Image (cartoon, rainbow, N blue to C red; front, side, top):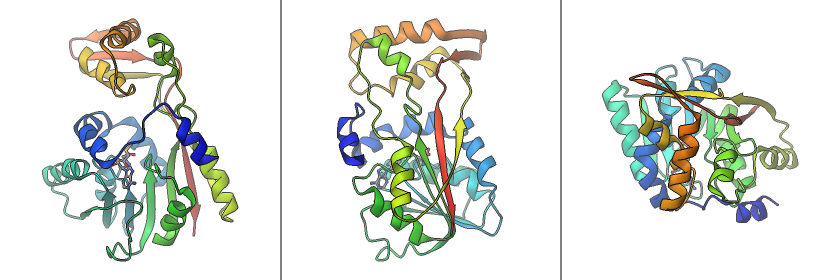
Length: 259
Ligand SMILES: C[S@@+](CC[C@H](N)C(=O)[O-])C[C@H]1O[C@@H](n2cnc3c(N)ncnc32)[C@H](O)[C@@H]1O
């Protein structure tokens, strides 16, 4: 069912090169985001922890975690994402992050990834063999595993797709992951991270960018409708602050289990 639902989703499956192209924009939108703040508040990191962050991206979680735990291993198959992470870590003077270019499918033993206290996969379980990936994550952690998965449309705004006249199927969400874990005799706990209906941006262009990434192969005619949609929800607070309101806020499931 997971694979069937994945094949029906509107958002194209991404290869590492696709993530490379998105790396700079993703970093801009996600580093220092309210999502990272809420995740860390739920995680309550301990200073002695070693953490494996699979599909780390530009370091959305790896960077703030490195400030609070002993060491972080950030694994991602996109070199551009890891370059963003290394730049940010260097600028912040963080020397306790090991960035490794690898995929969910690689042999982590061969790469000497090793065991960590905590294993994390945030918004990165884009794999056909979900049970295999979950088992691998479970084997890598001595104390606990934390997964972030979409709830329904997750970060996508369904109203945007209505506005530009496109059907939208976000694909399988956290409930598949939870049920697959159940079949693996892992009874996980689920909490939810719901972001605010409003988010502030420094400019109108930044607000537009926060929507453009949602649509694969946006046509010029669709972009016009997207601009009208965003403009209708944007309020200028002052020269440096624009507030964007959406009816359905981004929502994530935080799935966790202790070992
Ligand atoms: C949506 S981003 C999430 C980044 C970060 N964890 C966060 O929550 O902001 C997904 C990341 O997973 C990585 N990724 C996707 N499929 C992967 C795979 N099969 N192996 C390794 N990394 C993968 C992508 O390169 C990308 O950096």
